[in-house]
Image (cartoon, helix red, strand yellow):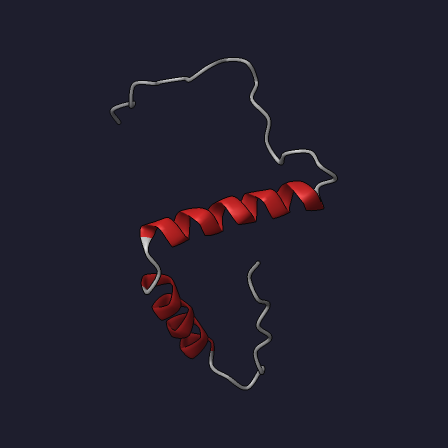
Length: 68
C-alpha cells in the first residue's frame, strides 16, 4: 500500500508538484498500472464494497466525432 505524506504548509506548491512529478516519472509502466489497480481496489473498499461506476448494459458505445 502507498504512503500518506503530509507536507508543511510553508513548502511552496511548485516544489511539491515537482517532487511528485519526479516520483511519477521514475516509475515503470507496470508499476503505474498496478498502482492504479490498488487505487481502484481501495476506492471500492471505501465505498462499502460497491464500485464507483457500474456498467449500464449498453456495451461499448462508439460515436462519430462531430465536426464543428
